[in-house]
Image 1 (tube, rainbow, N blue to C red):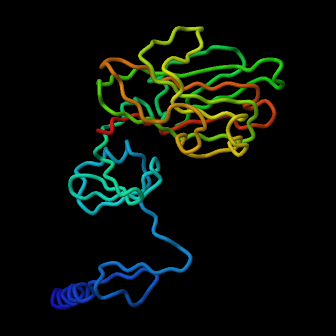
Image 2 (image 1 turned 120 degrees about the vertical axis):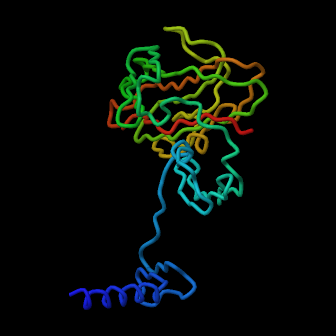
Image 3 (image 1 turned 180 degrees about the horizontal axis):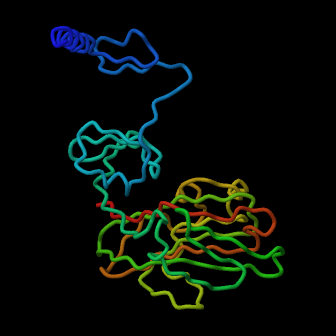
Length: 264
């Protein structure tokens, strides 16, 4: 039995060695390739992850590729940094995400901040979601926020962004603030000025239904980039309110992948 088995094993080894190319969707893979994919109605799907998840890849190797769901672009690791193919920049020069629980997987990282009854926010299933409101504007809309403290350094440039989603909402606003002023229960928070904001009266009507990075559809505020004059604690406040988030068929406003990092 040994004499018959060993020649077969040896022949199999030679067969594997003689075919260096693997073809998927083709019987004639390119001779210069190790893997040749061919299709007219399907595509290669790279691993999809956030910047925070990407930065947790242990010991990345040059040549690795991912699709970054925050930048909505393919990124390649070049041995010392990740390179963004869309912008031609090296995003890994950015610092780590300073938001704890930015993926909304841990509600304990956020502090609830109710202001006016009618609207509430809850964190579950990887999203923070605002619901409620009043059916008629004359009744007055609710108002609810969530926030957390973050330590920053003076003179550094920082960037804030997040993914937002909503449909069929009316007379609703959504705002992001970052300030060194600590929130006080019952007091409407507007310190430091709006950074990013959308609402269904000043923004384009299409923003009544949206699914995008907030910075790409924000229609008010000072923008996603911010620098602080002093080092210390700042407060990231995300708040939403209005007359009709879910009272007449709307889906509410959902947030995930909150990212706040230094860019230098």
